[in-house]
Image (cartoon, rainbow, N blue to C red):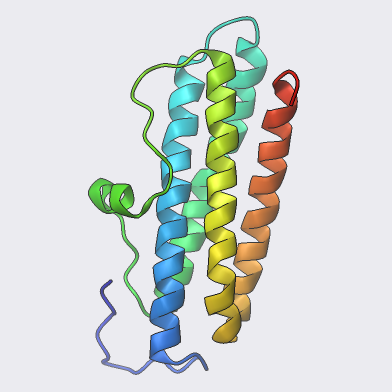
Length: 164
């Protein structure tokens, strides 16, 4: 993790070590969010079957929301004085979401997106202790908002599957 140069010291009331720890967690959240964005967009392009229209539209709403979220997360990392990761290889190292290389059927796509949203929620939840310890209310607010989105999205996707 690369911290920005100290030409003008950052003085936002969170010490440097706390900022680095929080930014490290947010970097994992950024990687998970971007990985889920890619997967959701990939499924949007390739979904087939009787639920094509509804899933195609749902996936589009979801990947658009994720695209906005990656910017918010990256900007929060920068606000903490740390450079945001942005390469595929770094995201692959940091992400807890496995890549999907094949084209699953529609039901498996939904299942994989449930798992992906739950993974992002777990990653977001794991950052709370560092943000609380650092009295970083802005990050706590961001995490709360991301949790609400991912938990609701997982619930909505899960409701599509039978016997869930």
